[in-house]
Figure 1 (tube, rainbow, N blue to C red):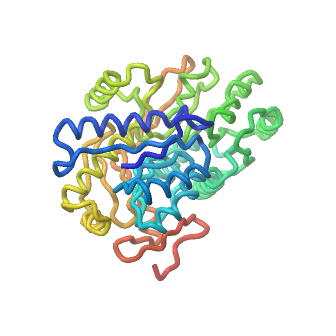
Figure 2: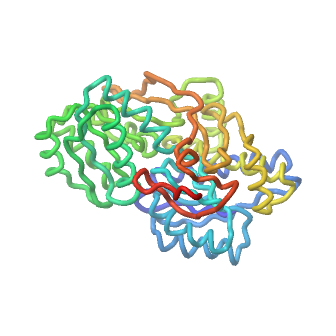
Length: 381
C-alpha cells in the first residue's frame, strides 16, 4: 500500500492524522491475519504539500514499488496533479478527503464528503436560522472555485442573495482588505472555504476587527481543528458539516478515539480525514477479500455489486457503485464561545447522489474526468 500524504508543508497540520489512521488500521489488520493471509506493507512518502512531489512519488510507487493501491492527497490540486498518472498506469487510488466533488474515474475511490452532503445540508440550515444574504471567501484553486459554485447555486435555489464572493490565493495570510469588504457588505452569514495554515490567519484577524458574523464551512474544524489551535472566541458561532470529529459523543466514536490515543498519545486532534483514511483501509480489505485478488477489475466488480459497506466510527458507510464515492452521516458542528463543540443537528445516511444523477456511471464507462454543476457529464455517458 502506497501512502502519499503531507507530513510537512502548508497542509501537514491536517494530514499527519491521515497517515496515522492508515497505520492504525494496517496494524489492526495485520494483527488479525492480514488480507487474505497476506500482511499489509506500507510504503510511505512525505509529499510536503508539493504537487510535483505527488507526481514524482506516484510514478515511483506505481512503477518501482509496485504497490497494489495508493492512499494519496489532501488538496484537490494535488489530486488532479497525480490522477492522470494513476489513470496512465491503471492504478487504484483512494482519496480520503472532503472535497468539491465531481471526479468520475474508476481508478479513484473517494471516502471524503462532497458538496451534496455538506452544502445541501449546511446552507439551507444557515439561511433559515440567520438570513438569506451570503458572503463567501474561498481558496483560489479548484476546491474553492467549485465549492463556491455549489454555494452560489444552493443560495439561489433557496431564494437567497450573494452579497459578496472573494477568492484568496493559497499562502495569503493578511486579510485587512477582505475584512473591510465583509464589514461593508451587510451579509447575514459568511461562508468560509479557506485552506492551509496561512489562510487560517483570517480568523484571529477577523475576531480582532470585531467581524461578528455567523460562519459556515465545509473544511474548517473538521480538518485543521482551528477551534483547538486558535484562542477563543475567534471561531465562535462557526457551523461546520463534517462526517466525523473527535468530539462526537457516541460509543463507537469514543471507542475509536480511545484506541487511537493508545497508539498516538501525542496526536493534537483526530480529524475527519483521519477517520476517512482509517476506514478506507478496511473498505479496501473487504473489497480484496471479496474479489479474492488485488486485481483492479475484480475489485471494481465487487464495488458494482453496491453493498461495500462497513460500520465506521461515524456510523454506517457505503460505496456508491456509480461514482465510487461514499455515503456519510453528516454532523452539524457548532463552535461555541469557549470553542467547545455542540451538535445542533445530525443527518444520517446522506448519499453522494449528484454524480450518479448527473450521468456518471462507472459500472458502464470510465471518462476519467471531473465534472461540476456548470459542466456536468455529457448526456451519452
